[in-house]
Amino acid sequence: MKENIDYELIPIEDAEHWNVRIKTGDYIETVFQFGALKVNDDIDSMTFNFDIVSTPDDTLTTEDIGLQNHVGMILSSILESAIGQAQG
Image: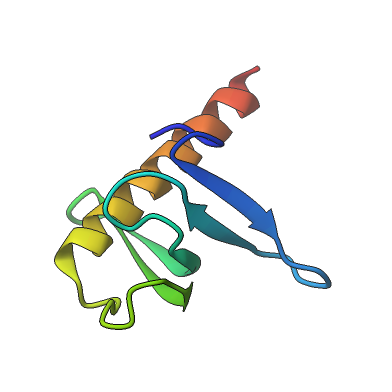
């Protein structure tokens, strides 16, 4: 996943978080927002939740496993990018 190709970050006015718009794939034009991110040190994993802000698919929910996987790949890309920028 590549920022500005597969997804774009959209700042929210007067807020400290961002929405994410999916630009490619099965969930194109779906906009979502990450909720809580939690690291589970016991099993070396991270969990997250998200909410759908808008979508052209009226039947799409956060329970959709494909969407969960797609959002997870976007989260991974965002984190990798942030780590790369921090390491300079």
